Image (cartoon, rainbow, N blue to C red; front, side, top):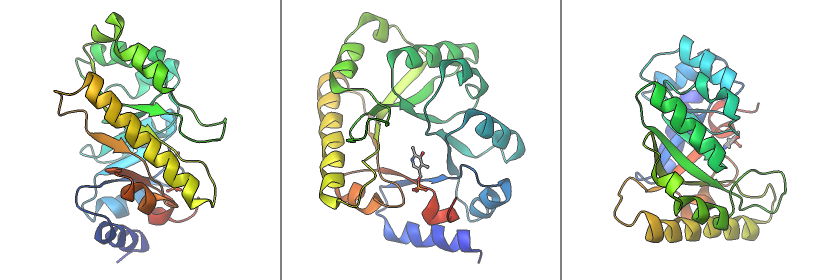
Length: 221
Ligand SMILES: *Cc1c(COP(=O)(O)O)cnc(C)c1O
């Protein structure tokens, strides 16, 4: 078995069945993705539009592609026809453009709202206030070609496990509040995307049900 297949198998044996694994293949060649694909894995994540569009062209069409990076509005059109889930919706403006581009392809694009839970300034994301303002607006309720399926967040890059745990717990709280206020009767709003190679165990303990794992599957970048 290849190292990649071995890592993936180990990961699948480690995490509970309800936790979905997105294999983050950014910077990795198509061959590495195929090694994971051949084990039956289908969900892959990329953070650059151009790289994602190119890999989509080259690889089997039953791959489920997740966009996990910061999305610029002028680039959404390059992935709108095939992307399976956009994790990083960090502004109303981006969401509106996703809706517009999805409409051109007669699709509904699944999205997660990204929240800023880390201490670091550099990480993108909405505040809870911004999300509430958006979700209660008429303009939001008029969007027909996006489906909000949950939340996504990244913890601070630190060795402080307690801090990481606190940040993940804060995302779970935001998820619960948004669910109760806006999606109480919508079972599609059910994804909590948090946890990467270094912190997925903590993330799952704090109720993540989707982890985005790169290094622990494909090795160092
Ligand atoms: C790169 C990346 C990951 C995966 O990181 P690893 O540490 O390699 O597991 C997860 N989420 C996002 C948003 C990323 O950019």
